[in-house]
Image 1 (spheres, helix red, strand yellow):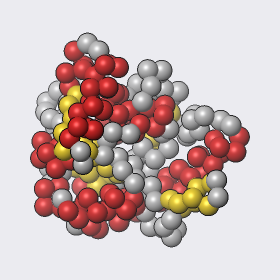
Image 2 (cartoon, rainbow, N blue to C red; image 1 turned 60 degrees about the vertical axis):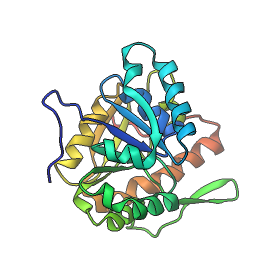
Image 3 (cartoon, rainbow, N blue to C red; image 1 turned 30 degrees about the vertical axis):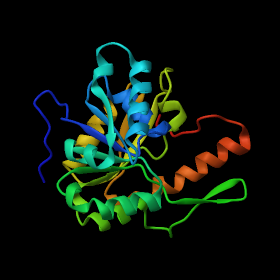
Image 4 (tube, helix red, strand yellow; image 1 turned 90 degrees about the vertical axis):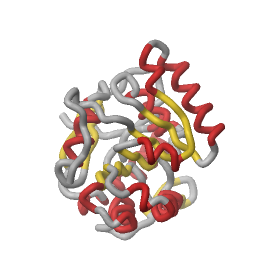
Length: 227
């Protein structure tokens, strides 16, 4: 598999599909100093407004690296595509755009979970994952990488420095290596190799655990740190 990465280590563009929420805007904010980032949405105005907000937060030359456009346009202009949307919509979007997603490096922070009262529980059976479902829809497992399941989105989209979090990344090389390098570009994050994509259910099951711990213990931004 070939993943285009220029000699300086940057990629031509990262598309954040459905990237108008805290996760997408947070990744845009953290990557824009070194990468060109496109915030995608079903609605052009919503994407452009989110990009404008991120640019205001960034200021300086890095602000010029952030733009907003329709999801389909973002896919066409990017080498790396991040699904910043919920499980079922992510699968529907992947089916609709499978042809244009062919050959892209796909990053999945998607988690399949549902509410049980005030808490969250996994939606999929043990040993499967949203990332595997996405890879099966796209029919290109070697290009799908899973990660960023345990980083609080509200912490990503903040001017505050991150608290030395660990990001477990799953997939095959060289795609996994590209994502791990992108993790290193974000100050306060450290990538950890979690093995093949088949193991990604471990982190996807951790996400509802962390959300529940935060809610039950009034702790904002529960995450994972490797000592």
